[in-house]
Amino acid sequence: MARRILITSGKGGVGKTSVAAHLGYALSQMGNRVVAIDMDAGLNNLDVVMGVENKVVYDLSDVIEGKCRVKQSIIECSQTLAIIPSAKGFDRDFSSKNLNSLTEGLSTRFDYVLIDSPAGIDVGFRRAACSADEVILVVTPTLTSLRDADKVLTILQNYDLKKTGVVVNKVRGDLLLRGAVVDLNEIQAVLKCPVIGCIPEDDSVYLCSGLNLYKSRAQKAFKMLAKYVDKGKGKIYDATAFYRGAGGAIRRAIRGNI
Ligand SMILES: Nc1ncnc2c1ncn2[C@@H]1O[C@H](COP(=O)(O)OP(=O)(O)OP(=O)(O)O)[C@@H](O)[C@H]1O
Ligand SMILES: [Mg+2]
Image (cartoon, rainbow, N blue to C red; front, side, top):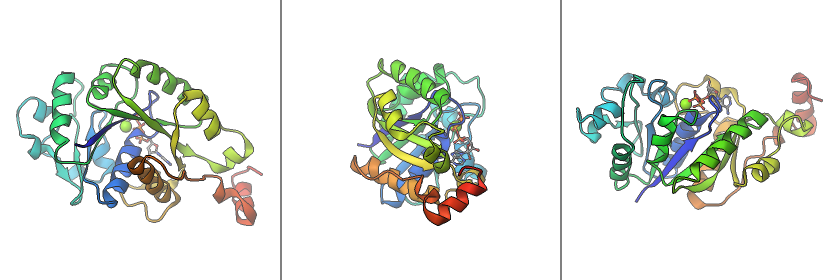
């Protein structure tokens, strides 16, 4: 049976969709069969990040409304990676039960079902939470993101979800070295949840439309995250390394952070 993992955050724009796409890709590169489902109805863009927006014919709403079979809505990105795109409109009234049955049905065909949640704590988030067994919380190392993540964790106590861990995204190693952003140990202590991944702020994520991050620092970090998720333990990317030593001092100077 697949591991059904909700990727959520509370706060918008912290990188849920990017993590769902690139973690999915890295897990699939390890030989796992992965399907990522976009549950952000209306503001869906997982298909764009995964570079398959031109292949969308049917979406999640068509499956739930019985207009197509599940198989018809699955877009294959590679032999081991697939996506089910989300509904384009806000007006869709899916029941949590239907979404849960859908992800349960996919469990036999895939090793991982990654669920890209909408921001916030409203109905879309709650429906997504009902379709998963585990949760990965995506945060940025900022107080606003951590406060929202903490609220989400409180709400998730009402759901039967295993807390797999926190992914700290958009980490600037230069700011971390200067103590200007919240460090990973503090995040772990505040959220009482293990940090399982650190993804640096990296132009390759921002600029890429598609899954290839071309040997960037972010690609390395996503590979490490995928190993951690798959094995339940592993190393966490060190975002400060890029800013240490002689080369690092120059990079810090360029960013104005000596
Ligand atoms: N590690 C990163 N480095 C640089 N840019 C990033 C990184 N992660 C995400 N981004 C960028 O931040 C923006 C928001 O990311 P994304 O859409 O994944 O967030 P989200 O949490 O899914 O947003 P929403 O709440 O709107 O669904 C995008 O432009 C994305 O390319
Ligand atoms: Mg998103």
